[in-house]
Length: 429
Ligand code: GUN
Ligand code: ZN
Image (cartoon, rainbow, N blue to C red; front, side, top):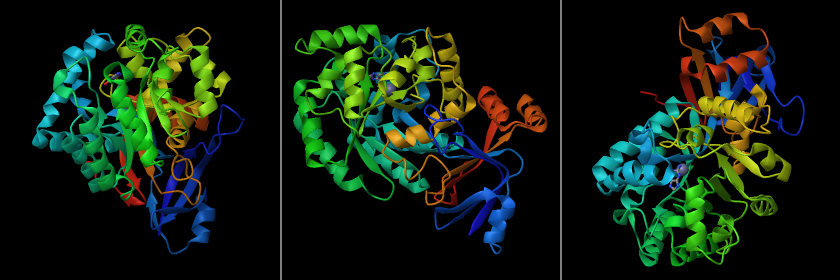
């Protein structure tokens, strides 16, 4: 039994729906045993409840729920920072050639270990991950996540047309390879499988049918892909599926739009698509730094809210600018300030988006995302770098909301000191 003592902040309620969603304990206590949170409250209360627990002093800095990344690519760590491209060029010239190298299993294993370490070092404890086009490399990802105890939902990416032929599969091969991965990894510990066509631009109808079959055969699988990211991509998809009324329909026709589906980006949706996403309770991964970096456009957050379309935050590494979900929070804030009819986000919104909102769209809202007793003890302790502006703020700001605002704004000066996964301290170096 352990009690973490410090400033504890989380968003057990949805600030888009109700006031007072941010809950904070300035000298708080969080007790956990065997991976589960037992109590959250003032340190004095929690201590009185569990007088024999060992106490870890985290009073310097802030304790948050583990962060949730709803869209990140494991083979793309090394492409971060490739400037000056728009989506299809960026894929063709910089990203897919790198992804083709993952046919080398040794390299894949190295990248997988590096990837899970980088998630943890950025305070991410749960992620929906785009795997590799290669079965072996995707198995390496699951293995690396299992080794450190990271909670991931991931799958083998599939494509069978356009872009880079070295990454093409066939419907038959993809079915067989994915089936093996599902049998081996789905439901093993904290690992889950997501059927992952790259996007319908590079997927034939036959391949999308295979995705449908897998979901029918295993109704508890997840589904993820890309949607409405870039205008040229949208035009190309319209040409490839002449029968479709809109991009979402290229997935919907094959039964791929539902409560367990997460669509990355959705920067340029039509009203019909938002209506359909809301109706099916399908969700969106909003990736603000990627949208800015690749120049895809400004996310219409207000339209998603008005339609009741659920969304979380994604780093979209390597289109995004790094693994930090604190940075994604800041980017969401900045881009909404800049967007016509943008939403005026508060620090509570940003924390909610980086934690509970993501947990919910991954179907894990009862398991992670906040520090409510009964949930998994996935916790992040963040400290300001010594001598930094953020440290000055931590010494002088007294409102928790202001402090949280500066944490997101000065994320670059925030150091993830420790991470607990199911109550166990994770190795960060
Ligand atoms: N659309 C298809 N593949 C990708 C990818 O790897 N990154 C992004 N941002 N969009 C995509
Ligand atoms: Zn992506």
